[in-house]
Image (cartoon, rainbow, N blue to C red; front, side):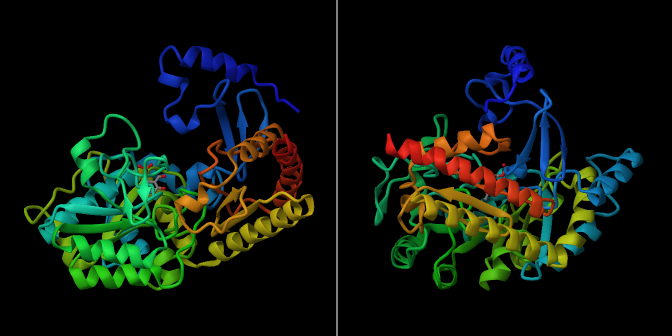
Length: 439
Ligand SMILES: Cc1ncc(COP(=O)(O)O)c(C=O)c1O
């Protein structure tokens, strides 16, 4: 059933004269027009036409405790009363750093910045400074923000991407510095032999290897047994800085993120998202010897007008003690599992080759028979079937991302009733996908 969206249509009419595409992040653009929202609570959001949706985008995976978590909102409200915002160091910054490192005991020191893109840039500068080397290796399909070197081989065109043994670094958009893109080394996720061979081959000039330890930006692709450890060993052997981008895995899969789950410790790691339940913050953490190099006069700059922002740190000060107990992750993980099993049963019953892969609060639907173990196998997902499924979900009041290779999330506020409603929506959506597949 189509929803009434006339107020969103009118807002788009107005916004697109002032804001390109009418939205401030291209991922929010939609045909025929974006949806504009005015309220959120728990698992739900309301648009300007009064439609209520179950949200399975949850701030691109940032809002683990649910929209408007009372503890977080309270801490923010108290911080607002102080009148302080940014530019001066907040009295409670060290307390938040303590809470952070209690969750992630594998890291020695932490510094707070604003976005994941920035945190990753800091990590790369630091790796270059520490090693005196220039090049960076990344994994095909991993997303680390939109900087020149990192928006490379993300949603790569496989016709141009080369063979698994010799992947071509492909710019993810026009406007990137071509010489930086061309210098990036690209390796396949979950391929120990090819990844370690690449590290070995380029060791003399390789500053860093960076990856999402679970490739969540392409849905939810777990590292194969020993893959992370093999990267760890190769980086240690060749003096390369290993960076885990834990923007999505951090605090979400477990209090200590992927490092805790898989038992592998990188030299540096980047965080954000769940850390402040949707308030803008990111962090760079790492070993003491590396992190001390960001001190004044010792290495690359660590500066920023909004770094350690009072409001975001206040949100983190309330979120971290809750995340630190580990019970949120257990509850949410069990609910994600329930969703995956329910979806799997319905898909099987209908004969649709589709599955949910997920962990922590994160999940994604793949419309494929293939085992999904890297970007290339994830890309076998049937985009038309996903499109039919996703548009049916939207009509049923589930707000999601239209890209067939993206990721979704629930939260602590997605209770059994919400999961029942989602399962019903999945059934109708899968029937729509079945019709598309038959056409
Ligand atoms: C793993 C990962 N790294 C980096 C980023 C970039 O973070 P931001 O959007 O805060 O710049 C994201 C954002 O989705 C991400 O998922």
